[in-house]
Length: 139
Length: 234
Image (cartoon, rainbow over all chains, first blue to last red; front, side):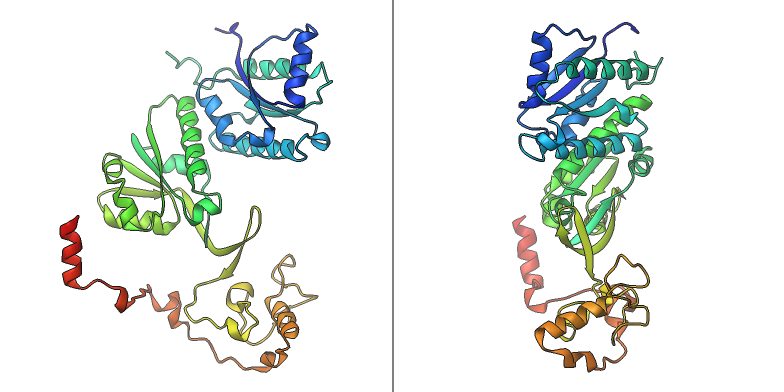
């Protein structure tokens, strides 16, 4: 199923993150991926377990989208989010899974181009890496 | 508190690889505070191992749970069923918890998910430092409340060695010299005369050098009659 759209989960903060996504969608920006967005009050609320669970439940890639680091609505929330993303990437590396399946992004609410760019980046990564299951062994 | 660190996931995966049913048991005490083996860490480990199994195409039943204190038999007993039905126990506690389960269920294989590291103090969020070695003969009343056994790289008892420089240790310049810190503390307290005190060679037989230590409080022990009554009531 090489043509199937990869499943991507995005945790977006409800301030700049979600607003930048809304603006992109309202502007008619096109993106090529099946992205399920989960709105969180702040990316500081995103736990490593949320990211791992998303992958466990079938996501091919996960991203976290928060405010710009020096302009975070809650001051340091997006820094916290980044630290957790980094920790999960370390855990994935330890078990032999590509850490690039998980990424952190930052955007302000006016960066209309950012979400299509993120969706495209994550989609390309997920397509390149394929599903987590071993290729050819899936039933 | 006891401070531990998670073993690398690859090492954990290797230990549990031969088994189908794995019971992952965390602890809500010290190792939860040091972010190594509490509820969140157990769930994340189970999740990561699940991903590894997906990647390798194998099925393994991972059952995660957390006890209030894994080093106390009463809490372990509460999850006896889940321990007995597993092939292996992955203890996400300090070695005390792992050994408690091993002693209670000697037929069960218990593997450690954590490396038990130090008796430490949380200095700031995410930082723990060693301040006690558990030598069994505390002398910090003579050293301004700072333990030279744990905090001096050479465990010097009578002042600093020649390697103390600008308050730092020659073994590692990132470390503070314990005896410099003791001097500063005693000066602050107006008790500098304690620096002149000669401490005789330490009797290490109160430490681990004397073999495994067991501490008994006779007044707290149950008599044989009390033990029988407790067993009958269970």
